[in-house]
Image (tube, rainbow, N blue to C red; front, side, top):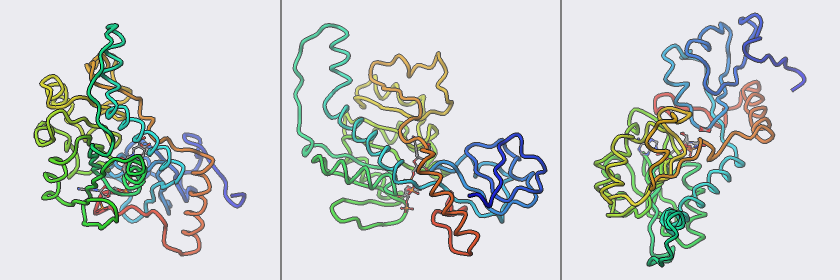
Length: 287
Ligand code: NDP
Ligand code: OXD
């Protein structure tokens, strides 16, 4: 964008000269300190950290990043982790460490149901790819959606139904006041015994203290976690060493500058020509 001058925080010079802010987790109050800000573009798919800043300028539009490259990355991650759980990889790795040669009973994907909490851009793409492997896929969203080929559920009433039917539960929700803490003891108890979870949404979706008891009692058979309440995950956190938890360092779908740049350029051009933004965040909804 040769017509624009780019300044990199903290060397932004006169704050009154900033028109557009491209941000991931700016310190609270920073965006409010830019008096002529016209547009905020989040450099990730989730904007929870931005919306939690009570000083975020109310009238400045906020866009998030929706990048097919990231969507593919998330689907790779979810498909890989669902297959890991489905093929009992956690058990086989624990057996290998103990030098135990023991076959475990194995189902085919068609006999396993995968429930996806958050059946939006990422959730639906993961769903299509899991379905192509043979899994029965169910999706849960806030508003009702008919998605051919999938059983869909919505709202608080639909949550119990999808939980009861999910052998593997994947969380791809945005973090909002309604979704915070959704992965809790009550939800685990509603899953079929021995179900497993994948959380690639946000750390605060999970009530961390309630996960280990659910795993230790056998109600859950495994958990794959990419996101945590505190990142990096503290070195003394019990999740690191638990034999039924897989930890990855918030890498499921990272922002990819070569593709993200073109999408952000297009968003700014649309703003400048008065076209609706492609990925404007609905602040009332919180995502
Ligand atoms: P979308 O906005 O496209 O989809 C969100 C989905 O969640 C929608 O189906 C929406 O329902 C549903 N939802 C929102 N609130 C509720 C609720 N209260 N009850 C039920 N369903 C709800 O978001 P994306 O798919 O692009 O991204 C989802 C999240 O994934 C991001 O917000 C971020 O937290 C996380 N993420 C994590 C990454 C990682 O590396 N770990 C990378 C990228 C994203 P409806 O369809 O009715 O609106
Ligand atoms: C995102 C993320 O929201 O990487 O984009 O978590």
